[in-house]
Image (cartoon, rainbow, N blue to C red; front, side):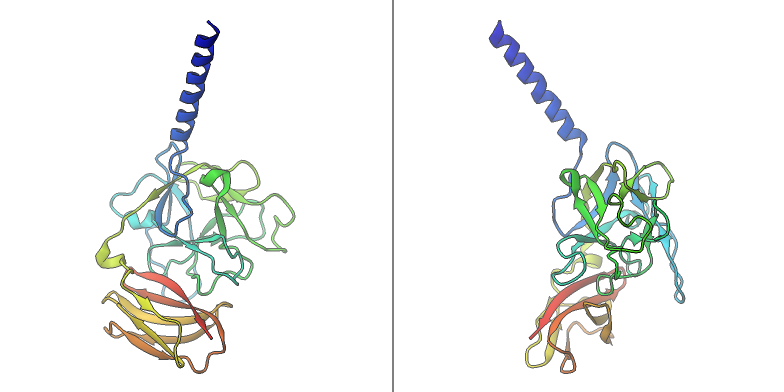
Amino acid sequence: MKKITLKFIAALFFCAFALQVQAQGNAFDHMEATYMIKVDGEDLYLTLPDQTPPIFGTWEQKLTYQPLNTAKPELQQFKTVKVPDGAIGSGFYYIESVIAGRGLVEILQSDVDSPVIGVKGNTAAAPSPDGLDVWNPTRNSGTQIFSENTCATCSWAGKAKRRIQTAGDGLEVKLNGGAGVTFSWEATTLSNSKFDTSSVFVSNPVKEVLSIGGLTSNFEQVSVYSLLGKEVITRKLNGNTSMELDVNALVAGIYIVEFQGKGVGFSKKIVKQ
């Protein structure tokens, strides 16, 4: 009788554990990849507005929770990019829209305890000086997203870490210091013709020359930035699939090479000796 009871308890424990794992959805897997970030157990995704930013002037777009958008999935697709060594938030992640020009997800307000998050065109090559665009998606076994900002003058300075909190259909995505929203990370396969960057080759400079190759017709411009976000070189591709850049004027250090084009935006790190 005792053995049967123990087996029964063990079976119940196993079932409860299995259900808990199933309920948690897909935890963040520490990979640089493209995802749809879904509220676990609900048809709600982090979503950008279907609006083209203005060409001139400053702008920002707030993230909201919206049901799955099969007509325009790119509004709900984001890339995770590991913050490079030497940059603010090294070892954590940037979360970047796959739509060229929208930029990194970041905190848009610094004077409230529950700030809204969104995008305003900033990139990994020119990140926030206070780490407002640095995220830790590994919390709670990869199901919660915490801000790893270093802002000492923001209203939440000295309080609990801000994390994405309080989900609801149509609500703005905001941070606070309480219990975080549980997310499921849905890996997404993008169109190879638009988003395949595996063929792109970027070498560390040799004899003051930076060689770039394997570019497709979707790419329009190449820029080089310092880790402080200063643009030091920019060139139009004009249909070229390869390019050599003279980097003689650059001092030794780490730089970010950023590529922009039609539906494409990504960056790679180089080191000049």
